[in-house]
Length: 324
Image 1 (tube, one colour):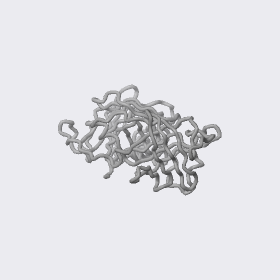
Image 2 (cartoon, rainbow, N blue to C red):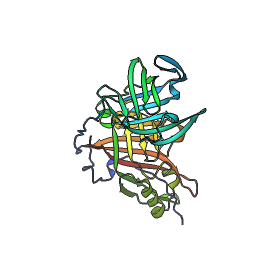
Image 3 (cartoon, rainbow, N blue to C red):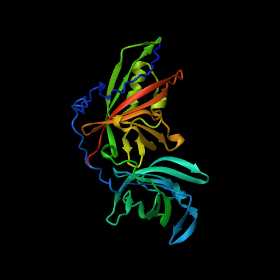
């Protein structure tokens, strides 16, 4: 008889032992002592406006948000932007995540690296894009963008998003993380009766290994949903300006996050665009620290391909910050 598994997973994050983390007890966990991310003082986030751009002081016909709609420079040195496709160099080092059409304009979601020059310019991918923040009044900023191969200096106008929170917890959390361990804990149900809890862990965050295990060993096919954006999670990014990103290598889901209950480590999040949605829909997310490791639990609903049944899934990721 076919098993239909209803995924009921624990939010008791210490339920499983991670070799990489040491003790499971919060009381015994070593104190968190994470170094500041290398660009914590330079991080910025802009949403550009439907306001005419200028060039050499002359107003242009094209509004700022048709050059670039969104740009963020994270604490960990990651640049993410939603950029007009025509201003991206053909031989760019950007990872191009997704194309979106806005009228006749095609935008590309891109991700790359950035540094800050001695003059305060934001240098993306070694100089493919150069941003200079000229001034800010309230939440409105003037930003000059130069694309040396394609675009002369153009001044754009946008909203500068301020730091959402800047306490110790945010200082520890807001950086780029690498997943070193993934845990799945669930209860199989058959004929309405719960079976024995099954616990399984994997190194890193290879979603294909997880979905293959469920399919081959537990007779549950959720591969279509779990692998919607990629076979593995490469990075997880939090920023103090409220951005949350899951980087799947060939795709990226980006959205906004905010605390629901900071003392309990619970937060909610929403994706920027409808087509960025993935099975982790923002319900029941939690985060805590175990020494210099961050433990993240995401809760989502996935469908089994063969019968269209929906199952609730909790995945626990143990994450480590790369050396600065």
